[in-house]
Image (cartoon, rainbow, N blue to C red):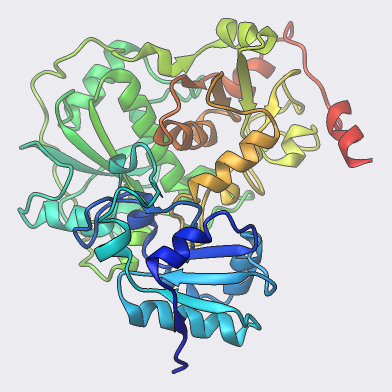
Length: 435
């Protein structure tokens, strides 16, 4: 093992504005976001640091991830972790990849996080994005950090796919079909009465802490129901509808079932019974502002103070495909801002890391900044039917953005009304930039 030079706290502090310096945080994405996984004084990461967990150094695609973060061999690197050996392991991988200017910082806990003088950043609502260890502690009867409740429900979300649940889930988790909360006629959220009934049937009240997750199973567009294999997007869709209904404490397992598997925790195949709740305990919807419908969406398109954000793939956006086997019309809503999801209707690669955890929030903000999706505006995210729109919404909500919504009807409802305008092809503004 190579012995790398160490950098002092004062030295690192003096280099923070050096454009050629890349600070690499190799702790978990959860500690990067704000969780104090080693009881450090302040949670989060060193200001400006990039998230590159040690776990990823085992991936074949590791160097592609590094390049996607604009970390190049010409950069000076400072690597830090909770443990010196983790920093050194990643430093060795960088060195083998042709990086030569590498230093290690080994005082994150005792000096940097302990002193308010040294700047740190965190995801505003990090506590709503939990780790597998946090869920495990809850199941083991412990009181995990940032939890102050005596009732919780763990929910394995899926769409028409109880097999995904029955073939392996978190012990004690009940299953919830997305159809419980959204109606297949419109794919919009169900009525207040239906939501109340469904939530009570699943043992969820407004005061229950709900931990949501799904299972990614490599969706294939040629399947009859590709969404059945995109369980974690479905889980975030269900989370968003629960928030709208009035569940005060909804958590999402960062990375879904994959994170539970990666942690090596026990997997259950027991079909857990649901324990119904007597009364939801709040008026539904308690947060109506989290969802907008067609009339409001039309207002937002015309407003300088708002964005309607299309979280679809490029082929959907330019009208080459509808993206769904049940939507005939192709095209986009005129005036919508492109918030690229990734490859197709059942993937969110541009919003996720390879292990399905949420992408570093600074990177998302940078991508959104470029197209004018900014926190000073009211941003309503949509896709074909609400799943991808909900995941993009959730990312903005986690960042603490004050006015974020899902346009529930999406392309499905918009395109079903002959009187609504639509466009195809590459928008003029984008064509000009690319020429």
